[in-house]
Image 1 (spheres, rainbow, N blue to C red):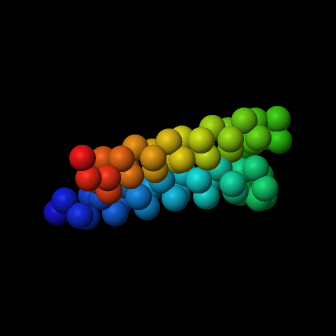
Image 2 (cartoon, rainbow, N blue to C red):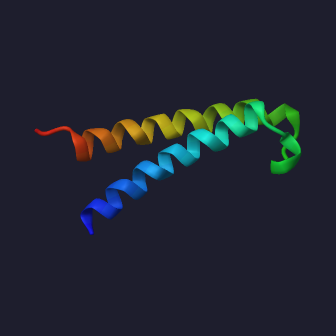
Length: 64
């Protein structure tokens, strides 16, 4: 059960980064977000995904 949570959390990090990239470079009509807000929202999602990934790496993959 513990490994399922670890890999699900890693998958969610990837989802956040991909959603952010989709908002920045992808079609904004899919997400129904105006172009005024797509760059800040996408940047925040990418940063949050990277931060989550770092925290998960520290928690599950670094031996302390």
